[in-house]
Length: 199
Image (cartoon, rainbow, N blue to C red; front, side, top):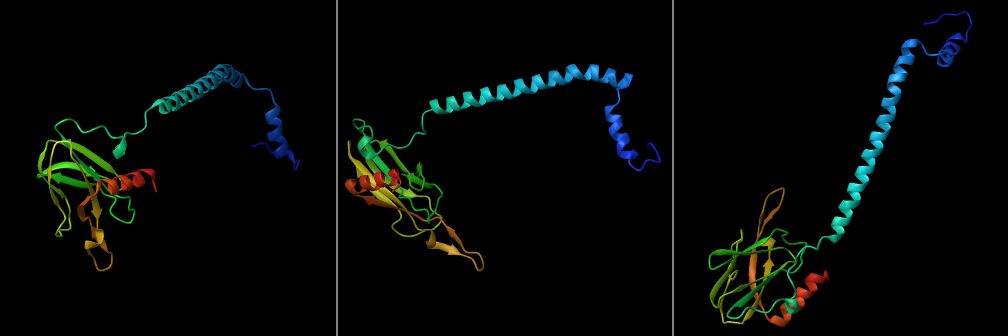
């Protein structure tokens, strides 16, 4: 540290050092670091430019992507294949009920998973079908039996009643309890349209 009798010499000394000519060693460092500093600025500029290009291309690609596939409305669905029948399953949008998927079994095998507010259909050969939800809560009349002829379409609503199976002393818990209900085609079509339009 520079000592002086001048009371302002300490601040003046530091300011004076800044205005002094650089030493030989400092000059060598500046000569060496100058081009690197320019190179670093160029590198960061190119990197930023590449990120901007990549972001732009990603936005363009996202704009060209097709929207997520959703089940069609009953009127817009493909016709039933000749010699087949069709089973429709849907759930009304009920945010206060289970948001879990309702897994549906047909004749003892997994057939579909229907989301809250979702719609699903599948073409099947004519015959007898036992449609049952996989449900934690067990109640009567949760499943349905149907005999399907070629070209026939049937509609089933998947209903949820979480409060059927609940418990807990301090914290209350509820378990999924699902039901399958046959619905007339005109009522089901209106419910599916209402559910798909978000009303």
